Image 1 (cartoon, one colour):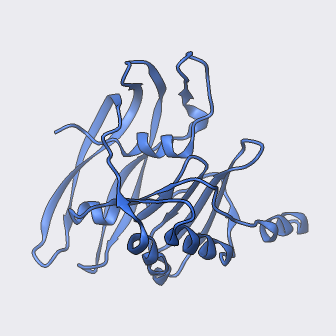
Image 2 (cartoon, rainbow, N blue to C red):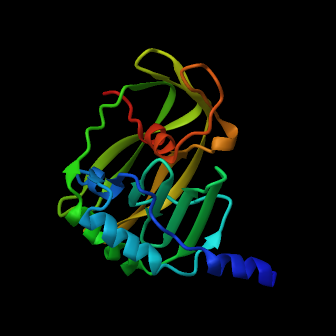
Length: 230
């Protein structure tokens, strides 16, 4: 590794964009609790998160965030993903370049972000008018609660197209599929979870004039989270 590359890593100054952010918890979702909240800009949670980011070190530039997060914080131009082993940061810089950073963390690191859930102001309504056409695969795992139970879930695979409420095409592409270990803190056990990711370089995104556009990080995250209709 060159000295120049090392200097680039040390010179990264992370700061939240002046945008509202969404907090999503995969862990709380499978615990059947409210998994999502909003962090309004300049709120207590927003300021605490900015302080947290200013102290982060050891981040390395990467080509992909290769893990399934327990918690995600996302806006149009910023995304933080974390589980018990890894932390990832993504942001869109002034040149519209998608920057990705990652580091390995101690399992206690995730508890450093408890203030986000505690100080976030309100739950999010997820009923946004986006419909998708594509294939889901079904899987299951055993959740290690006080009474173990089997959880069925679905993940997207293959070619998908997404449309807005006017039935206009907004995105199309092929999902990448991965498997990661998810740690159940309450049950003290791990189980594999399959999940779907969008590589924006393999996808096409459109505006209402059918022109190709660069997607926001929040749109990518929203498309990745769309669930199968029951």
